[in-house]
Length: 108
Image 1 (cartoon, rainbow, N blue to C red):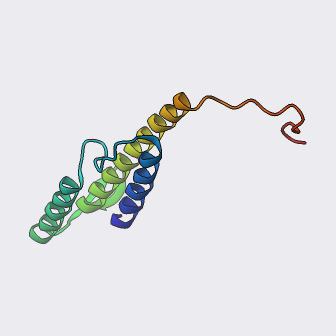
Image 2: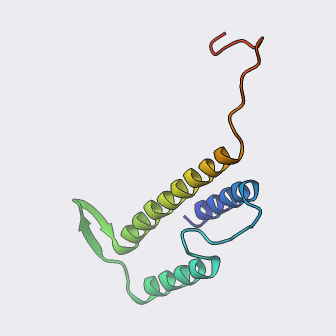
């Protein structure tokens, strides 16, 4: 999950560098320090409280599984929201191009 988050952050950073002149490292209001502290807290929780089995929506899970599921869904939502906003911003800055007169149309 950490690798996936790192790849998402790298992709978002590249996209933001192309869209905005100002580069930020925060995503969804959370910066890198907050993400690191969250990971540290999760590791401490796992060390202090061993995972026990829970039944969530009929699925056997433990609390780390539930936290990972919530984290993954939240990460995807932040990524989709960020991507949509940046694509809209790019569309405002660069108007659509008109096709050339002699270029073949779609499906040609």
